[in-house]
Image (cartoon, rainbow, N blue to C red; front, side, top):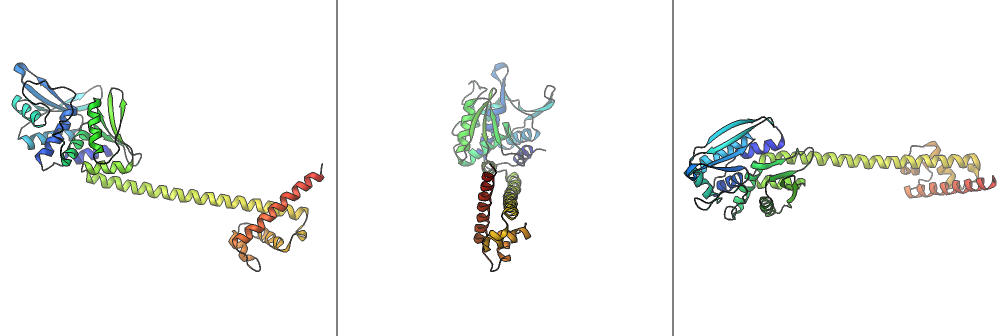
Length: 320
């Protein structure tokens, strides 16, 4: 199962103890994937569709525990998408009406139940209810990427008004949720790893949160190791390139003007470098008598390089 599926499975098995939170979570599910079939005599039949078995189970449990109503579950295959669609159905008019009124999705009998809805502010007035509503919205139309690959959380809404409301609810928990149009939908999303952790905490998916934190720690450790290796590799390459250049300059001076024309200090460090091509500046300084510090060795090697360049220019000029 994917990480997103694991999160939904975890959320489907947790149930708020407060009735108002149960109603808020159910309101989100109804608002995003609920529909009303109106029969003869304006009789309501409430349906909630989902392709996720865990979500269907959660809807069924919320209706049963919150309202003491026995809903039906129907299953059909979607041959186009090659998937299974679950429908939780409340067939009795009175039961459907009671659920819709409790969720503040309809005020009175006879009022039209619109396909695109936003939650009544009363339903999400308390912090715990906002958590429950976001949880329900994610169960209805949310997904998350595998944190081992990338950090991405999203909830797909059919209407911009619903996307804006969910964005505001998420932002009330100090997260910078954004909205982007996608075909005929509007997607509320989060991209940063720390905010994905926060949204899992808001939805109370604590097991998934710990799993994500473990992945984040491992990724950060790998990144730290890679940075150190890259830095050390760059330093080694720089050191090797400098040593090769120094050897070339010293060899050139030896073959052109000879070491006997060099000052004593330069001659000593030139011989030490030729004898120990792989030695660091600190190691070269220890070979000299008396020992010389890194800065002193580096200064002498720079002098040798400047002298080699000068000789090359003179040799080039004399050859014209």
